[in-house]
Each structure stands twice: as C-alpha cells, then as structure tokens.
Image 1 (spheres, rainbow, N blue to C red):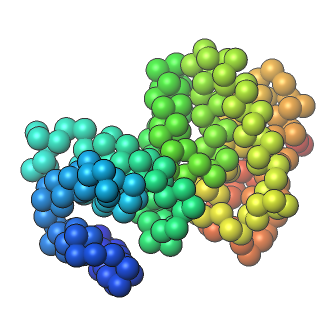
Image 2 (tube, rainbow, N blue to C red; image 1 turned 180 degrees about the horizontal axis):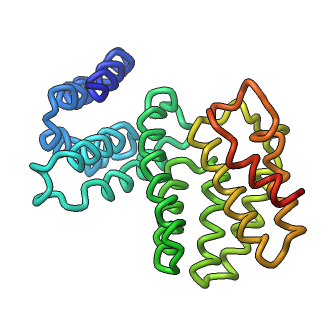
Image 3 (cartoon, helix red, strand yellow; image 1 turned 30 degrees about the horizontal axis):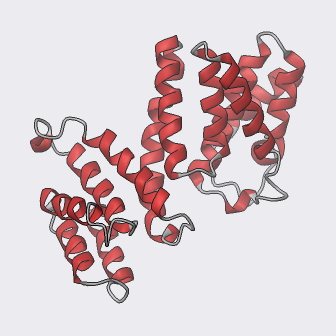
Length: 253
C-alpha cells in the first residue's frame, strides 16, 4: 500500500513535466505491472535520445526492488534486489545535481535501512568474508548517496578488516576529514535519518576497532560524535542514542 502512495505522489509530481512515456511508467508502477514497466524503462535507457534521463533508471530500480519482494519473480529474477541497487546507482549518476531528491529520497532511505540491517549482521559475524560483504555494500550505497560520510567510514574500516589495509586507511582518513566538516560546511540537521544512523554506527565501530590498539585514537573518534549523539539536540532524528553514550563513557571515562 505504501508503494502505491509513493507512486501516486510521483505521478502528481511529474505529470506536468514529462511526456506520456513517463506517465505510462508511473501508471504501470501503480498497477504493479513491474515487468512491463521494467521492459519500457530498459528500452528508454538504451535509446540514444533518452538514455541520459535519470528517471527511467530510478523507475527500474523501484521495479526490481518490488520484484525482489514477490516470490513469483524469484526464478526469473533471482538477483532482483542486487540489480535494483545497480539501477539506483545509475540513476544517481545521471541525476548529478540531485534534481529529484525530494521525490526519490524516501525510497533511498528504505533501501539504506535494509542494507544497514545487513551491515549490522555482518559486523556481528565478525569474519573477513563478512567484512568484504560490508565493504561491497558500502560501495554500492555511495553510488546513490555519495554524501553519506558514515558509509564511507564503514567502507574504509571494512577494507582494513578484510586485509586491504592500504586502501582502507586512505578511505578512513578521507571519511574522517569529511565527517569533521559536519556542523560547519555541512549541517547535521540537513542529514537524513539514515545518514545520521550510518554516522553513529560508523563512529562507534571505528572507535571500537581503534580501542584494541590505539585507545587515544578511539577517544578522538568517539568524541567526534559527542555533539551529535551524546548531547540532546532537536535536529537529531534518532530516538535512542543510549548505546553511543555507553560506549563514549567507556572509552573516554
């Protein structure tokens, strides 16, 4: 039902802007005719005159996602969810200025929450194989949400954990430099819920990793998040920061 409402909202938003082909795509999503919509999307993306329009890539991502949740598509589209992520990345590459942010953000948030749960499970598994999976997931996310600095830090950490230390350390350094701009160049209140959640998770996991051999560095890392997740603030979208506060006290106490 929620997907139907999202599709209807998309329809109302875009109906005055795009031609009949795009209205047809929206109508097919509303009618849950995902295969038919997908074939039309692919046709549009393969046409030299229309392949640079970002929306068909986004609609294809939505179709693949919905198909990944329906058992009847399992045999014909066994990698539907993975393909959805791929098309979401292609969409973002085409929408360089993020013109359609307001219209696609809810879907992107949904995908990121799903991937965060998988990331948390990989972390609990604690194997090199699981770390490689997480690094791969973060790479996919950065293709459709390149401004998520927490995701970048998680990627770097998991490169290190999967024995790619040189690349991992470089990514970690870059990510931490970007995270430190939050509150100056980037405002914490402008971040989405998933971006805040990935940031909190990233700072906690990297601090725990550092605590094993670099307690001073761990304290510096967890302290970055003090103003965001320890102090009470109206622009924090997360309901429960108790785990962060407990870890902060443990590392800095």
